[in-house]
Length: 321
Image (tube, rainbow, N blue to C red; front, side, top):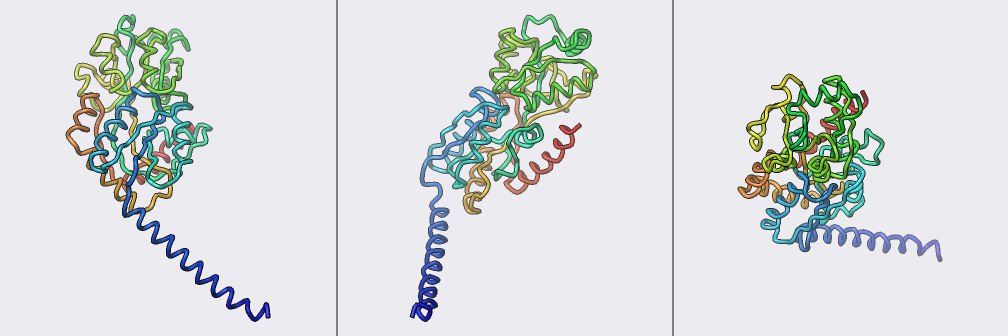
């Protein structure tokens, strides 16, 4: 009797599973269709006040308009950005936890951190960040060449703060060493803002950071930016030459994406991608980002993902050298 009844039982169970899957699918479709129906958060993997934080907060403010919900920005610093990136990777891929994704997402895994750029979905590029090198306003170093000469003549004594060991600005200092033969001593901080504050306070001889993190201090007479480490001059610092124009061929910079834990439903990616595109194109976002010296830049989710994968290949080669 048990064996004769077993197929019927299995058939009933099969119908139940099929119904459950159908309901789950319907529930998922309904959830995606009503998305978002609650507040979102954006994790920034650095302290408040830096270029990443500025970009994320400005973007969040504009996205709130189109999505009709509040977006909370949460700073989770540490480990050159790896702490915040790990928190994002571990979140539910439901579209309610997003993150600012800096260029370090393709660098940290090459340097021993438990970070992999494939752990995320990319919702669009939002900014490009030119690099600068600056010294305290009362520094004896008047030019980039003065600073390079000091680091050449006195190896490992000229200190340069950056946004964290393994960060893009740490890499920029390393690139300066390689290009000039100097030997600067990198000093890591948890983000660009504290790195800049250390230079303003005279705790270090110089700082490498984004234009938005140094331009205001330069204008206020707290720092003296010696060079733009980019191919083109920065609008926020029109009087400052590039390093290349000063005879030192170094051009390096950061970028920022909005991302999420891998596995977002396609419908949610579409909603968020559209909202990010609208925010980046807004006059308010453009004004804030450009006035800080950075460059608003949009890449849609597909193009952003392709770009990140290409950058990962580039840095895998560079950091292996």
